[in-house]
Structure formats: C-alpha cells, structure tokens
Amino acid sequence: MTKLLIQTDNTPLTVNFPAIVTMTQAQFYEFCQANQELRIERTAQGEVIIMPPAFSDTGNRNFNIAIQLGVWAEQNGTGIGFDSSAGFTLPNGATRSPDASWIKLERWNALTAAEQASFAPIYPDFAIELRSASDTLISLQAKMQEYIDNGVSLGWLIDRKNRKVYIYRPDRSPEILEQPEFVTGDPELPGFVLRMAKIW
Image: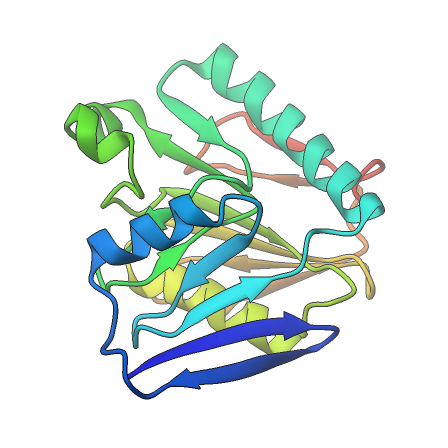
C-alpha cells in the first residue's frame, strides 16, 4: 500500500491508498514528472512525502548557501554542487533532496547519462539541510542520520531558529556549534567555508 504524506505546518498528513501497492522507482519518477510543481521525497519504506514550498526567507537562505557552495565547487574543481531541487536515490531506496549537496566528480561521472537525468542512484558526499519554520528538528535529525547511514561523509543541519549547526560524520555523535560565524568543510571539502551572516 502506498502512503502519501502531505506536510502541513509542522505535521505531515498521511493519506492511504489501499488499492495501490508501493510505487516502483519508475512509477515514482513518473509521479514526480506529472507533479513537477510539488516538492516530493520518498522514504525507504515507500512513503511519498509532499512538502510545501519553502517560505521566501528560507528560499533566500538556501540561495545564499548554494552560492557559497557553488563558488567553492567551481574553484576546487573536484566535484559538482546541487541545489534543493535535485533528488537522489539513496542505497536504502529513499529519494531525498538535500537543500544543498556536493558529489565528487569521479563518482558522478561513473553514472550513465540516463542515471544522471533521473533521481540519480547515488548518495552525495556532502549534504546540507536548512531548518525552515515548517520543519521539526527531530525529523531533520533523522534525515541527517539517514544520509550518514547511506554513505554521506559530511552533513550539516542548520537550525536557524536556535542558531545552531549540527555537524554529522560517520561513526561519531553530531558536533553542535552554537551561533558560529562560519563553518568549515575541512577535511572532506578542503577550503570550503560557509559564512553564516546571510544564513541566519
């Protein structure tokens, strides 16, 4: 059975479709193509999550994150960056769209053109989630742990409300930074510095 989760305010709304079995990856891709105006993810259990558009101020902060990551990625040249519209199929079967992400070039280039043109079957090497007013901290913490469990080597959860940044790495408890002026990506992203003035 497919469950459709529609996130409203801070609570996802679950709609059950008892006559429908869990969507295949191809069916999920087709569903997303037919609903391109929606922000859609899928959990490892096959639940489809429809999220509201980002509020304007959150969209601006996402934009500022993407700019800083993009400038570094161009200068560094060892990988490519993605904004919040990119979806990736993780090894556990979930389809996730981090607010910003980066993948090493050799891993990205190992995919076929068809894989790159879909929800690429690859985990990012680096992922950022920015908490918006409609996000619960616990749901984003679970998502960050899912990224790490599926191969992501560095993840940042930015909690604007409390001015904290949670740093995730494999086999470690999250490191918590209180009101940092900047966050560095070393050693995973050498030289990358996210300046927080335009993110808070």
